[in-house]
Amino acid sequence: MFTDYFWQCYNKLIEGKDSDGGSMPSYFKFLTVMAFKVFVQEKVDVAVIEVGIGGQYDCTNIVRKPVVCGITSLGIDHVSILGDTIEKIAWQKAGIMKPGCPAVTVPQPGDSLQVINQRAKEIGVSACRDVEKMRMM
Image: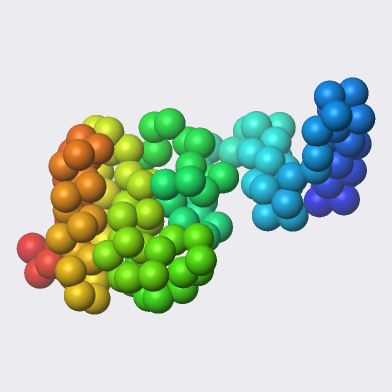
């Protein structure tokens, strides 16, 4: 099935590229497109989708109304894309949250949790909860 879907997507993108003078997406973006095609074709009811590098500008950030959004433990990574501080990275990662959609996170380093909570308010997230605190409830 993977091979069939791979070539269906690849051929369609090549066809569009040649007729529109565009370019092929990066490998990760290609796999993201292919994954969504598979989800539709196979009538997937539920999918857990992980962002690639960021959140705000990540190619996976096209789901308009997810059931929930989660932000895992942040670290200093992809600094050339996300920023050179944990707070800048937190801002980018928090961009995956959607208005009216509950969000969860884990304890975060430095001031990044404050950044996540501020972005949640700006975006209109229904709740941004720390999963560690939720276990105690």
